[in-house]
Amino acid sequence: MFTIGISGASGSGKSTLASEIAAALGGRTLVLTLDMYYRDHPGLTLEERAAQNYDDPAAFEFEALLEDLASLAAGRPIRLKSYDYVNHRRNPPGAEAAPPDTLVLEGIHVLHDPRVRARLDLRIFVQVDPDECILRRLQRDVTERGRTVESVARQYLATVKPMYERYIRNDAAYADLVVPRGGMNPHAIEMIVNYIRRRIPGGETLVPGV
Image (cartoon, rainbow, N blue to C red; front, side, top):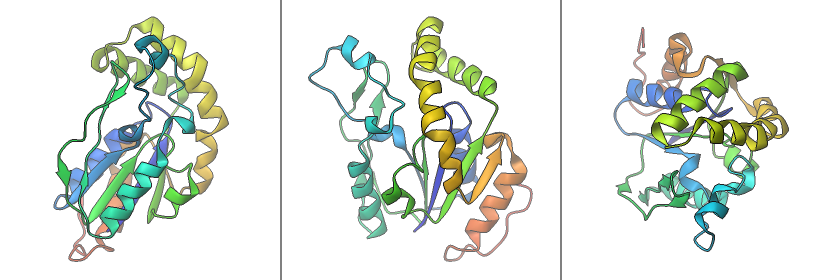
């Protein structure tokens, strides 16, 4: 299993890049997001859950992620996790996912934990102007997650921007490749896909013009 990690600021285009890579590779490619591994807080009220710092590395259950990565690497299937952004709760386990030929893992702190980094065959950091990131995040959170403009702005100033400056931007030092414009960079996607195809069984054929 060839494992790719994609990190970068919130709204930088990590999910788009992961989707574009997976679509170009086709076949047995699985995309996991770090958001699937948000810690659950069933004992807190909705207001208390909403007030949590979801941009701190401590918000994620890296132990559960490492267990799933180990299972997939050993040829064992996992049950996919998902997260309810409206109620700030982890959903019940979902469908079973078989071990893929290529695994794409994306999230703001994918390069933070050294144990996770050690399992990555290719480490990518997405570099996008912060103004563009906040505009993308605003559009996503309002249209897809039921947030208000005021709540998005408040969260950005309280946790998103400080955690980016404290942790995320420094993780670029761990990357093998820094990609500007995220999923909107077709040349970078082509190079990444061709690099991966040369390293997975039966994937030696290059894919021009992805």
